[in-house]
Image (cartoon, rainbow, N blue to C red; front, side, top):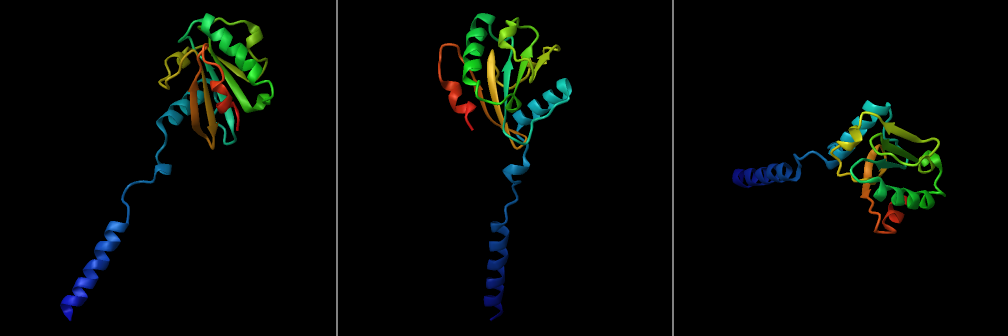
Length: 155
């Protein structure tokens, strides 16, 4: 009888042990890209990733103005219906662009050129979609590929 009780007790202990996960939940692990971008915003602009849905359009010196200008012209049309409070544009001061492509408000200029060195897989024009204080999606735009931004611009 003692062997049966010991067997049952051992089974309960082993079942309990193996059913408990010792791995941390993925929610508790900070996304490295979110962490980098959040630190960048705070260091350079004393800003943060908002809780509500938001778009960040990043314009870096990793491409030429000849490629960036058509992308920004296209984006300007695509984003005409999006309230200016729902997006922020960040420009590298190393890239010279016409003022007509820069919004009058809701934008920053990175005078330290840190955006050009930020390790986030950015190109000339990139869109970062955020929600819940985290990066949800990221897209690098290409002047020759049309329509790729439509999905990320919609909520």
